Image (cartoon, rainbow over all chains, first blue to last red; front, side, top):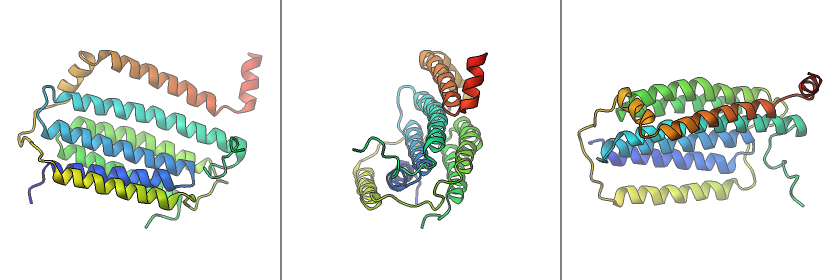
Amino acid sequence: MMVGIEQFLGVGAILFCMGLAVALSKRNAIGVLMGVELMLNAVNITLITFSRFSSPARPITGHAFVAFVITVAAAEAAVALALAMSVYKNRQTVDVDRINLLKS
Amino acid sequence: MASRNLLHAVLFLIVTFLGVAGFFVLLSAEFLAMAQVIIYVGAISVLVLFAVLLTPRAGRDNGETKMAAPGVLLAICLLAVFLFIIKDTNWVSVSQSPALGPNALGEALLDRWALPFEMASVLLTAALVGAIMLVRTPEEEAEDQLA
């Protein structure tokens, strides 16, 4: 079987949906962040796939976009994990079920 | 299905990041594969590992919330839609890979995308300062007020 654009897009879609399932179902906030990282990786695979298999005017644009996504993902991970640490320091928990101060 | 221990889940996440780097190599994006290994496998996974280890009294059982079943169902429905669209679309693809080395990426980042590139550096600095501010202890804040 010839490996083409469909196979790579399929891997990206499967990885994205697995990340979505993890992000929506995990109780630990750090587990939710791990799901978000999986979704970002899946989107990166899809962007690189389109950059490789379609013939845009500037094929390097997809690569540049992925470089920016990786940068922003690193910043997001640092701030989100610092937030999780801060919540843990105040509440002794990172369970998203039990962080319900705003719930009346 | 899922690992019962969150630490094992982090280790499997590292394997997944390495696999994604392999996909980048298959798609002839060698520079981004190297960046993926350095940033995700080297930095972000260590950060997640530290966050898991520094929250010792939090639940390590990797459990699910009450909304787990609807969430997984939504993800499966979305996956079905994605796979149908991928199967149904008549993709026009080129077999010849465009030659894109790190030279081309560097030129694009510093020429056409120079402004986003500089904004990314500002964003990283802001994230660094913000992360340090968020995890400061009260003793450190008192020391800063004395100084």
